[in-house]
Length: 312
Image (cartoon, rainbow, N blue to C red; front, side, top):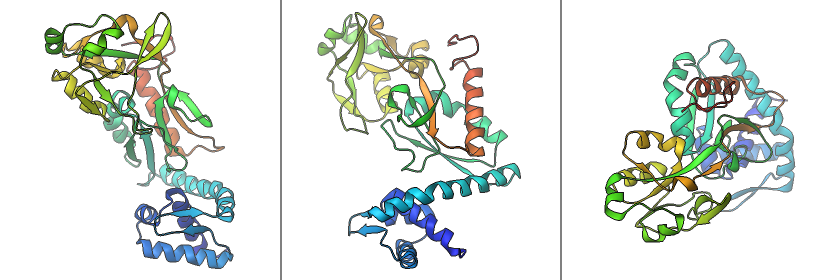
């Protein structure tokens, strides 16, 4: 095998993953024209058309799909072996791509980053926030962190926390002006801050535990957002009621910035999990990050610690 074939194969994999010459070229650091020529050279060498190209899209042919399935594990093993060697030698390098929901990032990952980089300056971390469903293999992520309801079924899942609680709150000023709701049915008379999910485009229906059953309610109000921090800012300013994981709202509750409401109807959901693709060999950078994350959340009381107790 000639040396340049490895570069051709890596370029082919990037185009297949991104389904776009432009995005793949940006990821590799070349021009779309140069990448297009690389793909043409590979197709000429193989005497097989790997992609169907239009002005708007790039899609794998059936032969391209089969070829990708065969070469991807080998390319992954080669990258991982190289990164592991560099990490063990203390060489700067090794990028860990992490897709994470906003609440998980806020309560689990963001507080540990400074300490992590102090211990592991040779690992570069790319955080991509997305509260929707993400195909981490197709999008090229090493790890995902979501609550248990949002996991892909074919992933290795590592529990990080106990069950999460969906809470409700509002600012003291809002409650003084509009009153305190005593039952979810009363929300039709209140201003609620809605959340539009990026994965489906649907507006999230608030969820309650009513008589031991999980019930949904569509709520209305003056504001719909797609970012939890925006919703929190609006709630603190008295725009309306907010729902969110208690674990990410705990600080505002404790500080008196928000007041807990509808507490008898708070529902529990599976906790946060770290997940990654099935592999016979987990890259060293991934093992290092996961070990550090688990140690951090246990030490700070967010996880299933040895005594099985949730420590606020």
